[in-house]
Amino acid sequence: MSALSYAVTDSTTMLRRNLRRLVRYPSLTLLLIGMPIVFLLLFVYVFGGQLGAGLNHQLNAGHAGRSGYLNYLTPGIMLMTVAAAVQGTAIVVAMDMTGGIIDRFRTMPIARASVLTGHVLASMIQTLLSIAVVLGVAIALGFRPTATAGDWLGVCGVVVLFAFALIWLATALGLAAKSVETASNTPMFLTLLPFLGSGFVPASTMPVGLRQFATYQPFTPVTETLRALLTGTRVGDNATLAIAWCVVIAVASCVWAKHLYNHRGAR
Amino acid sequence: MIDSHPLAIEATGVRKSFGETLVLDDVDLAVAQGTVFGLLGPNGAGKTTIVRILSTLIPADAGELRVAGHDLKRDANAVRSAIGVTGQFAAVDELCTGADNLRLMADLNHLGRAAGRQRVGELLDAFGLTDAARRPVSTYSGGMRRRLDLAMTLVGSPRVIFLDEPTTGLDPRGRRTMWDAIRSLAADGITIFLTTQYLDEADQLADRIAVLDQGRIVAEGTPGELKRRIPGGHIRLEFDSDDALEAAARVLENAAREQGAPALRVPSDGSTATLRQVLTLLEEAGIEAAQLSANTPDLDDVFFAVTGHSTTPELVAS
Image (cartoon, rainbow over all chains, first blue to last red; front, side, top):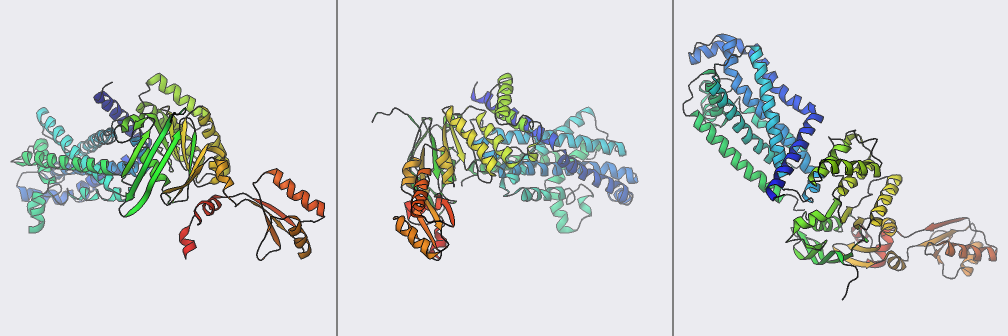
């Protein structure tokens, strides 16, 4: 077998290993899927009536109350789902790196990159499944996307790209963490970013400093792109910005993660 | 020089520092194929660092290193194909079952489905883990975890195995089981590089022993050669009366008096012959000892003998 086919075989083996771990340790996945669902229910049923009314006024878009707010909210909740899922990535990566097993892998004649590739692929599958579950709940609650087949393809593309970027970021954070506890905390700021953007309310309703942060942080163009694809709002240059942010985060995190991985264990 | 035994591990002039701290200072090692080599030293001597260097985990700052005939720097992957490593902390996947762990190793060694399954079954059997094979490793005892760890190391049929303190933290029974496993590997002709803090462990298992102290090899030889240099082994005799003590001191000419107790120490190699000789001398003189104990030398005695200081130099200094 050639070096490339070894790399593919080893990465598949590592992917299988990580998926098996997900199956054997389902509580983490359930916890991480549960969080965005709780926020979805909370914001639709507790705050939704009031926020929906405010939204009509603000956007003048003819949305109707609670169900209109559900339509507005769902893209933000989708990003929160990704942010929550990658917390799991950081945790499992840190579990590997702080346990003895990584040294075992490194003393074996396997494709070096397969350890990280396996984590990233398994996390991608886990994240996409989480998104599907959360989207299913939103639709059960009355979310009615107006997306065409082409729009749905776009939604998949944006979600995969965004998840890819955040998974690499979480992988790097997991590698950088000295303990599993640290790794479970550092990516937590990601779950806050949908709030500090246009995930829950329009950025234009926020006070000046926060508004500027909310307008220019990466989650906002991704939210707006998903919102445009799903519910037909105006997309503007958000799609371009969203793709650019995802590519920048993915490349930077990937380089950082590989650096950490190759230079770890100096002692 | 013509060598009948080619070397499995060959290291000359190995140095390693972490920041300002010199951890390995000009270490030379030569381990013949098919032998068991014991590296003996206290915590912090640099044992684990040597294992990490020889197993390709970290580079040495200087030195020539060859493992299984391959240069460590130029051909690390060829070294990795020939070695197996079992570290101080069990390198197992806690979330998965024992069988899962072994199957993962079979897959990573590219054994193929049928051959992999067979090897996993053999190893579960050999290490007494068949009944626990389907349980998650998080439910295993310390000894079972170590055995699984060693079994995982063996999946790829390595020619050279590094065992970094394989019995630290195990109870006596777990230790025995591990020793038996190591002996049977040695019997199969696998070269074993073992680190330990216990003299008796090195004595039991190793063909040759090197003593590492603060990053330097301070003694090397067969267990017998080393033990001959250690005066720590003795028979201790305690007496009820000063008369008995005096009488015994006259009979046992090489005995030393103990300070603060009516007791004598007779140097001993730990054999029953020496013990019998002492008892016979006492019996012939009609002296009864109140208490007898035989002390075998430990790591501390080795250190006193070869370095002149204890394994915990900072305590001696203070």
